[in-house]
Image (cartoon, rainbow, N blue to C red; front, side):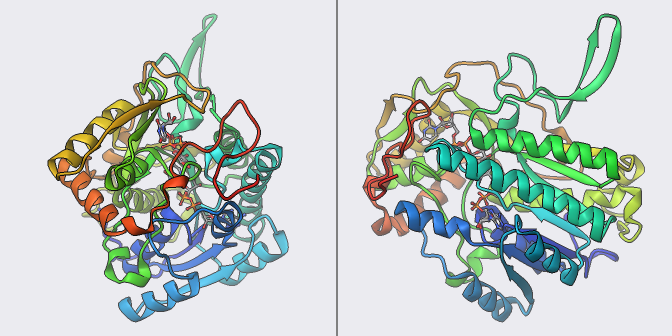
Length: 428
Ligand code: NAD
Ligand code: USQ
């Protein structure tokens, strides 16, 4: 079902806002390899954040120009590039018109919760960048190509940690004898997570008002680094953040274990989230993008009969509906992740300790968590689960690059209750 070579899929034109980032680069290559015509749109602000704050990725990443050049040599496929800000309407509308995409896959946002909590300036930047960028994407579709599909990266963190099951986007509520199916209540835990909540409302409105076809992929925390395509050549290597601002839980724990730093469990460690392997991110996006084939307004894309997406095509979403998929494969608490990394690290002969540091965030540390995630699997996703072999290979990867690790960047760097960042080289 994840093949893209079938009739109708080759030559589909996909535009990747944020295609130089962690998820976007891996996905752009994955789909380029499978016959999609890809244009990356990115203003490279993620690289700028590292320069401003004195951070660096574990892996030595090439410039976007070198990455794309090398991909052309390795694969024989051409990726187009437009460097600019999607919040800049003049730039973005020109880039959009010139590429004329069938789908926009929108990764292009400031995605760190700690970054958004550093100070007023970063909170305002995060919400302006994310909300305005998404509105521009919606207007581009409405005004320039109404049958272009939007695949938007949302986040599981939009739901927060309610004391009831988390549904996929919508919940049916019975109230005072009446019933309705409504967007699931949102409780973002940072100005970043709240920017995604605002995006979801704006997309939901545009879908209703303008009949934009949209899929919101509420993604969990991503781990891992290698995909088939990014592993094909050193110049294609993906970024791997381990610092206290952009590094995410499992990726951080793996680097910490590799360099002998105690694993930094925040607070009691009962915080539970949905997680997925980056190899599943790239496949989910493809499923999400292809699943839009079922939206009647597309008209141009046909699914091969053997494709599991046939299930979706037989049950089409109505035009103007914002479809929501919860994009994660397993749920783990922070304590469980620390346990897994610790056991695997010790098995490989590493000395791994776990420490409970005061939680820099405001979040529940013990809570109920049960989120649904059946829609992508119903569409054919067969997940890579977090098995020992995965943690092993990630640990080996981190050990390979351990000389690049700067220990002072590992500690938690942003406190939700205070202003400023404690990154060693930043005066923020
Ligand atoms: P990233 O920071 O590595 O990549 C984001 C890219 O978007 C960067 O290359 C950046 O330069 C670009 N960008 C940001 N604002 C832009 C703008 N205004 N115009 C043009 N380009 C812009 O982030 P990521 O980890 O790849 O995340 C991608 C998306 O997935 C984000 O929307 C994020 O919220 C979502 N997501 C990520 C994770 C995760 O664990 N990494 C989990 C869930 C959801
Ligand atoms: N945590 C620790 N120790 C650490 C790092 C994190 O205990 O060293 C805890 C955090 O307190 C939190 C949990 O682990 O409870 C997850 O934190 P994270 O930093 O791994 O992820 P988060 O800040 O939620 O953000 C990441 C991505 C973001 C995406 C989100 C998906 O940066 O772009 O939206 O994961 S989700 O969490 O489902 O909202």
